[in-house]
Amino acid sequence: MSLMCLAYASEATFEAKPVEKGVEPHVARILMTSRKNNAKDQLVGGLYYGNDRFFQYLEGEEDAVRRTYDRILKDDRHRNIVTLIEEPLKSRTFSNWSMKYVPLSRDVRAFLDDQGLESFDPAAFTSEQCEKMIELVRNSSQEQNLSTRDDPKSVGDAPQVLSSGMKTGLIVAGVVLVGALVIGGTML
Image (cartoon, rainbow, N blue to C red; front, side):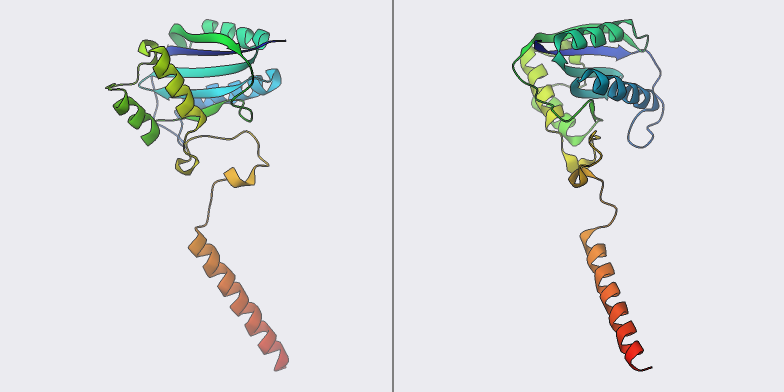
């Protein structure tokens, strides 16, 4: 079995709705389905949606990548689909992601500025810009909560609910409370 990678650009056919939980609702549904199907087919990759356009990168066994791309070509949520990269691959580069998602972020804005691009239009990317976009998706900043990792056991990637200062304060309060209970218990 041979590995391959494929990147494509497309335009969304749906009218974008307000973002919910960091993701446009139509895109959220696409991500849920993609993650389920890609995990089953052992595909990995990343997706960026902005300016009503998609940039998606897939890698995996050639047959599985081609089946997935055929489904995308028939998906009525996409139009003007353009294949940007389609080539053999020696090894996976998104090993733990069935579909990483990167919404509009400082990383993407910096990429567009660096490339002298005024808006996100991946169908017009050069091959060098495609490679840079793939690298951006692969390495997008975790601190910005831009992506969702598939491995729920990966504690280091879980969102932080409490700041380190709040954690320290709670620990100190707990120690003081236990100390007060111990001292109070010895007075009885």
